[in-house]
Amino acid sequence: MPALDVSTQSGTRAPGPGEERRRRLDWRVVRWTALALYVVGCVVFLSLQGIPTDRLGLGLAIIVLLSISVLGRGWAAWWQMMRDWLPFEAVLLLYYYSRGFATPYTAEQREVGQYSVTGVSNSLGLPLHVQAPIRADLWIGQHLGMGGMPTTWLQEQLHPGASTPWYSVAISLTYCSHFLVMPTVAVVLWLVNRDRFRVWMRMVVALALAGVATYYLYPMAPPWLASFHGVFPGPPVGRYTSDGFGLIGLQMVGGALDQGRYLVNPVAAMPSLHMAYATLAAGFFWFGKRWWQKALLALYPVAMGVSLVYGGEHYVVDELAGVAYALIVIAAWRYLRSRRLAG
Image 1 (cartoon, one colour):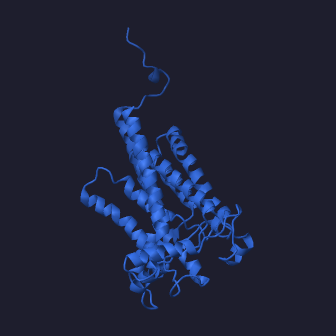
Image 2 (image 1 turned 120 degrees about the vertical axis):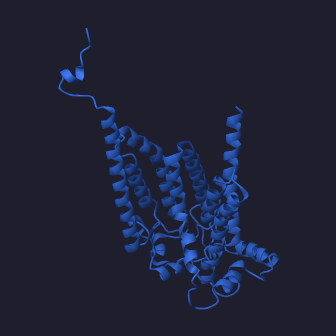
């Protein structure tokens, strides 16, 4: 006796192979349409508002993008994505908003932008360091044949007049890439290799925690602030990292939670996390690459280093510290990986 077709008896029919393919195709159309609308929305936002720099806004944008990538794959796939991202986003947000607590300045001083460099100490009683990085960079500049501070030498070479040079666009875009490269790498890795994504995010979090801990333990005035108070040797330091955006009609913009001054920490300079994350991005993909690929990867931290010194944001010694922090994180990852493979 033939078995009864339960789906037929109940009035429903199981979808055939052709119908399954059509359903998958339909969801692909939905995902690609949603992605196209997302890209259009990003372009409109960039043209009207500028380049976003706040972690909260970028985190929400990433969640929306990855939600689009799992459309049609069920709630389980969406919830897995959220479990992958939320813990790391929470730690990064904690780091981002804790920088304001590491500052030695009061809320009133930050509100009006008054940042003294004499007699300043943070909540731990640790003094603001001003002269130590100047002495270090003077030593570096003299041994590199610059005759003084690398910041002064670079600004004299690249910004000799009052007008903004055309290559300031590249300088500004390189500086701003700090806010976009880390999450972009994370999104790509999540889509193509979840194991690599988790490694990347652990390294990002480790670097963030090390950076904010140092901001508490070693508050340090950057070149532009030392110059503003007349303690920087040589001519005044220009702060040029955003000048290039004026040439192309863009600007950097924070989110709603960044509009106040309570998150600002003008002395979060040692180490340079701009330089640290640029080095981390290059180092993460370094191993196993050909020489020309390594040369291309190395161009990014080099370009970031030039941009930061030229823009008056960091001393060379800050950048070297950022490189050292990143290399330590990479070395720890390689060591733990080799231990795991050996075990």
